[in-house]
Image (cartoon, rainbow, N blue to C red; front, side, top):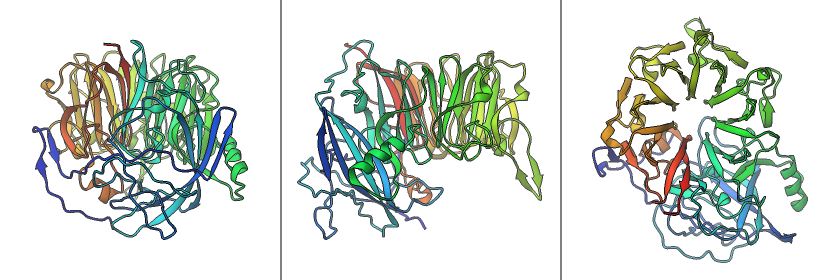
Length: 578
């Protein structure tokens, strides 16, 4: 039974915001823990340490183990969202070597933000084994131990971002599993530049900045200017695409651990292996990932439980390195969108294919049978053409939790999937085939979230509809909206150009500014459903916003790309000298 917490509700700011619970967004100290092994090898400093993570529900305090008694002192840190603009670079991984996995169906983090703001203090000397030990208000459910490896490259730094053409990835939100790529596990409550690309990469190629990114369930993909792909975060199903054998050998050779290790999280970006061609687009689903190359080839990797990788029935349930989808060898893929367990792609000719879990009609193929009142569906293990769109040239696609959408070259919006009142028809029942949404004018961009949908029109208006949990539609309330409604243009300074939907939050770009709204961490979501929030709205708090609110960031930066994950958000900013 989840722990309940009584809180008071009060208004925050204008009518578009409401505070249900406020927790000070105090950051934790990011000083590297004292390693159990330390050596200098050819300009690199190698450090190995152990992390103990105890998982459960409730509020936590965490810090280093300072003695054998098991008592722990809280780690005290500076301002939230603070990241060093210069200094040494750390490359880090963590490997689970003991303990039980978390409960299925609920992602929990035993590392939560401190509940009280504390002044920044230096971390005292620590023993050889460093432990991040949460101290909950309720008994701990279980504990896992992770093996950490950090490689430091000396004298590699960038003190500022001053180039007029320089772009840089910035992220915020829940930091568990290392999904933000910040080199630490704490959440970021406001936009924070990813230090891996800021202070000097291990490969020394600092002139190859990321130009795009994709936020998934608990991982993030970064696409650089030259077409290389990097990944950070949870790797339990191989969704980072980095394999594991090399890292296993490196870790085991240092500590001589006999049992096999499972690489679990990467807290800083690491290059995806196995793609020798230039990549022009990446997409991240719940536990799977994909990349499209310049010549239209599709590579997929990660979880394949329902055929969502499109590699056929003989492919394994987990694919830890990118594999080319050979059945699309004669097609040139242009765009791919990944949902929770399904995938959808469009070709240069405008054809649309879908594959993976077929439940609720999310693939748009229309085949679903019923036995004794229960719907029976089968997965598609290879890409299959959506026949209902034959002769229609599609230019944009999107995939949500259990529904999908696409826009043709004439601006017509098609949508299909679970519970049509959530995907925009105003009537009950799943929509098994693509159906036109008449209530939206000429459409340019579409995004699907957990159970909501947003569309940007050619005039820069934004329409939204769906479940509206935690105010994710931006319409000023939380009531379900069964058909598209336009957001007031006065909420934005300029027309909306891009939109992205997370599980229960939304982000748009308007005139180079980012606006976010929806789930910010209000009472109920974390304790009842086992999912924690860490500031994915970027406003410095854990408040649900029912209307768009501008995210504050540097005045000499403009947003050119934004992506919402399950409970984190990423953006690409373009910086200028002015």
